[in-house]
Image (tube, rainbow, N blue to C red; front, top):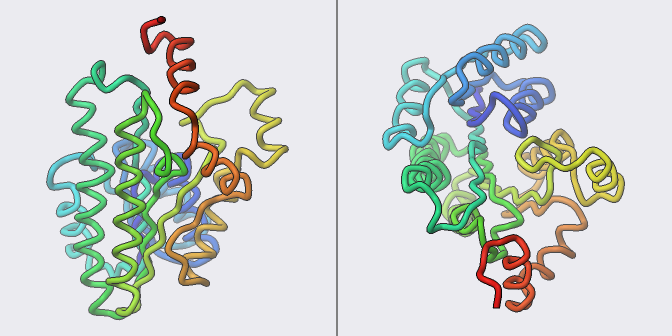
Length: 261
């Protein structure tokens, strides 16, 4: 049986690929837009764990990306039991300053490709009456904050879509899990070294390998719809949902994102 991991060349996606191979003995189809890094990961996991690995370098924001992945899996006669929709990007900027091309990339990557992959592989999993899908959302899905409106909104879509899809596919033996991490110790959100150590020590930031291990455990051993990582997330999410507008505008002015009164 195969597992597909998108964004598998680095970060959280790499840990998904490694743990699925090491701990669950899945053969792998790895997808990313970093050809050299992806090929190295595929070769390394094959050598270390003896699983079959395919590297499929491609732009997952392309309009027909999902169809290309599905066609490749059919060509190689893969029985895909696990789909991990992990690929994503984070854009920090006001919407009116964001390049429309970059807007299209995040919308296609987080929404269109993810949805199509769930549609295509969800059907074959339903026919087999067994399958597992992880869709990577974010703690920010519950918030409305400036400079990341596209990220927040698309991750909110992933969360709502995954919960709805859970109801459709669970009776057919397919478990859909939305994983909503908070601060994770990856290059996506770099912190100064001293602050990073403090955040890790207090549990505010989670190591990616820990996040993945716990997410996979919930995917295979529970019927949960959502995994909100870390105890701190249950404290932070309600706080972020009720931030006063005045405080947000104050911070924006301090950051030079809004005119001073």
